[in-house]
Image (tube, rainbow, N blue to C red; front, side):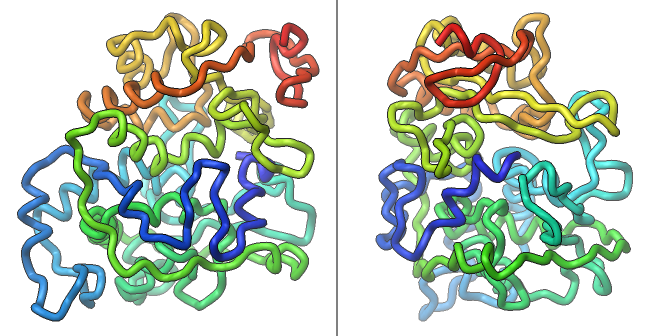
Length: 365
């Protein structure tokens, strides 16, 4: 994922709004917090183990490990929030892309070309496995809470927002607790990674978020609202909304695609390629021809008919979501404003006046 698709997060100060999605980060996110799993057993889990003076399970150290939290956390981590997708050395020659054997959660050095970062900057997704020497084995659960809710690392530094904490912070307390319980169960990967290094001119462009006291469980009775939450936590707009030259989301182009994604995503692990994100709006140039069944099939198989999705699209994880959750996502996408914006990665890239980038069929817009 290019720095351009995420740079707006670098500019965020406390109280900023995210991608014009009208989520005010200075207010409780309960208004946009919806559950990312379907198991009703977790409602019971959220009621357990809370002392009388505790507002949230996240205040407990450690967070109580329960079979319900472990199962729910696995569903989230291996599905909607896709933690291993960044925190592992992945084999993109496989379909779907997957962590290399024995490397799940063991961290990864992100090539500068992928994030458009100049030297001597270096981005590293750290080892988050239970390894006590090179991983997170000695971290506290509270370190994970701060990272996912506020963007503060276990060492106190502000995390580079390629780590999508602006989205993850809207997980309910119980969902976040479940994510942490599962992540802390990952098998140790005894691999040492270098530390992230960012120059001062980059570090000063982003700040941590304020503490959230409590994010309650969501109401899933409204499928569209629930789908909006799933799309938010899945940070879909970070790739599917193009940005301008100042890296601000282009007005009227929400989820309209065209954002360039550059990296080693193809069958040749030594060849860097660029693909453009697709238009997810219900315009004929987007996915208006999808129905619910087709949408689920595309996510499960990674193909639109005979045409494969690019491996940088994390369908490897989204395919693990339940049918009910995928239906909720589709229901929300159907409510988006239609945007006519043709994007086709099988065609040679041409300049597009709408998204101001180059992609297949760009000249037709």
